[in-house]
Amino acid sequence: MANPRKLRTEDDIAKLKVSNSEKARIASEQKALSRFEGIDAEPPEYLPTLARAEWLRIMPLLQELPIAELDFLMIASYCQLFAHWRELNDDLNENGQVIVNYDEQGIETSRKINPSFNALMKVQQELRHISGQLGMTINSRFELVTPDEKEEEDEFVQLLKGVK
Image (cartoon, rainbow, N blue to C red; front, top):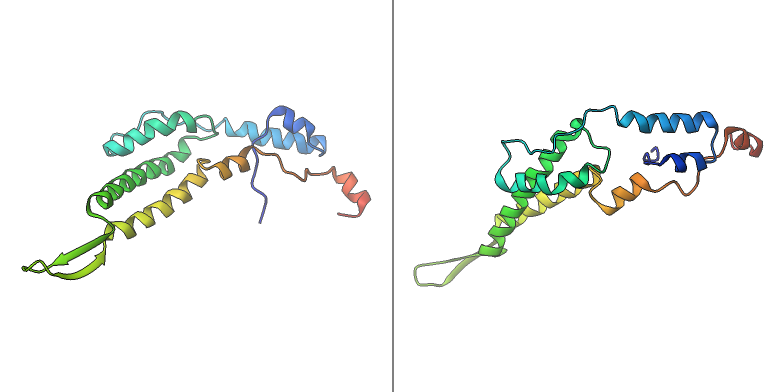
């Protein structure tokens, strides 16, 4: 599997131990990110109230990353999932993780897990997945901005070492 791409400043690129043509390629790739149309900071009308509030909360933070209009669906999905997560969490807070059924005499007849609990777990899993793809987790941000520990060597040096 290929290494994840990193966001680098011009200074970071200049310090890389790679050929000038490779530095130019990296700089060109990074510059290409700015060619994509930016995303509108206003949430789409169809999002529910909680999802719209989350959109407004995260958008200023996401705009510091190289997001574009192409990321719209993923951001909208994240916000909608966030709204579902909040609603499911509210249900669990109100009704508990276990639903207890009683008969007419008040005797417990059955216990079952609140369906909101399983739904909440699935929503949390999807939120974690999308959050990582959008750079909303600390690990995903480190992958975006931390230079490789083993910086690539110039191809000529690799040939001399017998690596290539």
